[in-house]
Structure formats: C-alpha cells, structure tokens
Length: 87
Image (cartoon, rainbow, N blue to C red; front, side, top):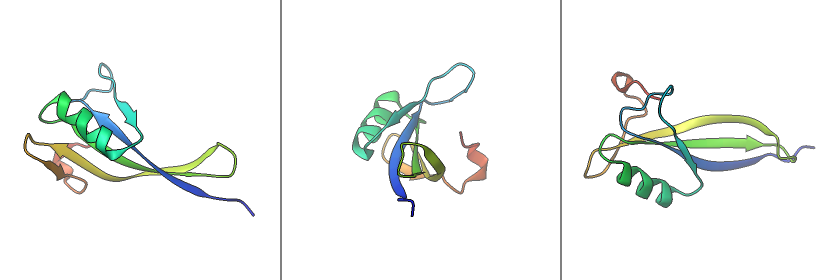
C-alpha cells in the first residue's frame, strides 16, 4: 500500500505577472510568502498549492487551493474571481 503525503507550498507572483518575462518564487511557509508578496508591492499574488506525493519523492498530483492578491492593506481571496485572469 502506497503512502500518500500532502504538502502545502506557496507561489508568489509579482504585480502584472507575465510568464514570458517575470519570475515567480516558491516558498514553503505562509508567513514568508506573505512577507515576500508585501515587499513586491500592491497587486502581487500568492497562490496556495497542495501537493500529493507517493512514498518516493515523486510528485503524483498537485492543485491550486486558493489565490490571494495584496491590495496594500490586506490579502483578498480572488480564487473564484474570473475577471482577475489568474496566473
């Protein structure tokens, strides 16, 4: 029987992210991801990823659980906002 492990990591995107020119960063903790997004400025995004791995370090599956956008005061949940054009 295979052992499945779920891990959570966070991806931080700069404001006006363009996959052709900009980099994104993977962070292991929510607090570090929030700090990083705040430093990038208003409009930066934070994506919470759920990873499912088998017993070996092979990644079996992953999905995006939530997406937040920094508005200068707080992080707003934009997961279901189709007008935002999620990364």
